[in-house]
Length: 551
Ligand SMILES: O=C1O[C@H]([C@@H](O)CO)C(O)=C1O
Image (cartoon, rainbow, N blue to C red):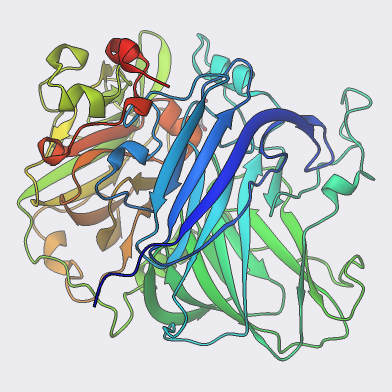
């Protein structure tokens, strides 16, 4: 049979700053065609999506990353500013081509500066072609995207994070569910005229449901700092998928979801249909003062704007790390949908996560190296063998794990900047052990959701404490591990991943908390760039490739 001709879906997006009040407080948000969250891309397996992005922000560059999509054969459209392309200059238009070759739920968001946090994000739903079916049934397919929300501008935040003394962004002002939240307008010392509780922009998101049905709800998170618990009052959720993979179904009251992850859950509308219920998002990784995000689960035909008669569920305790690890460990590939991992790695790279100082600046480091982007995107530099663009020595494969005490602040807080990358032999199998440690504050360690571009990895294990290089690998799940593109590493804990370096390109791997990746918490992998054809001119225009750009 001839291959089916891919269906092309064309989008024209204009990205700009606009005043928005998603939580009743008016501030400049980054919108796509006037919206934040941006439009949900609804595609079918093997469609090709063409997105023409016009950057109408007046003073900022931009790039858009297609999160969870592998962009095989066209890594230049991964959308990672400084890694796979020159970011799009103000006034310019860039045409992305995105091939959705896996069914499931994915995200898109800005991958430049702190723009994702300020509204440039959305969801991608990839359905099966007619005639194919999922291994579960449902009546409706809906989606919800979760973020945390700040009132200060990207400029104030970025400047504070890059200053001496360090000015931390603090806790988010609110949590948005499908772009809607609620900030307390009676907060003292608020500038008058900016907060308006009656603005229609901040009426809560309503998910209207019909009684007696099964809903597939796709939930995504693009938070910049927070790990969330998500629940629907009085309703259990059966987790059936994550990213592009089916998982062995299991039922939870609340879903722990980390920035960069998506889940599909099934919900039965089998509760008392005469009232509405709360949908709640709650910060669980920090002892946060941010109020819980609230939306309404509205049983039709009840009035959607009537608040549920109950007090919203308070959600799990913020420091209940064990429940989070238990839920992560319970997620397994679904029988009949297992892609078994290679049984042995060719190489093991340990990534120690620490918070450090460099010349008085607070940074995050991997094996004591804090990542900084070079002026010319890696993909262009590697393809052209421009060795002067970045340091050609490999970054460290690990740290001195016999002596490093992950339970105490670093003995020597000083780290260094680095821009070198891991060059992987094409098709080799790589294990990544992400080891979390104490921050610079005594008895504090954070949660870091690590995201890998261009691949899904097998999650071989999670654990508390220091990874035991002798014994923990014996406990790896090599039978039915779930595949993901983002995994949470818990405080003082570790996660072990395996992937095959079989996607020619240059791929960023980083903490998906935008503030942490901004502060250097990332690494870069390269594989098979020599196998790629000529790079498109449209990704050039900066650094040493500044004269190569032709509109
Ligand atoms: O990157 C971070 O910096 C602060 C704090 O550790 C320093 O003020 C914090 O909570 C982070 O997550």
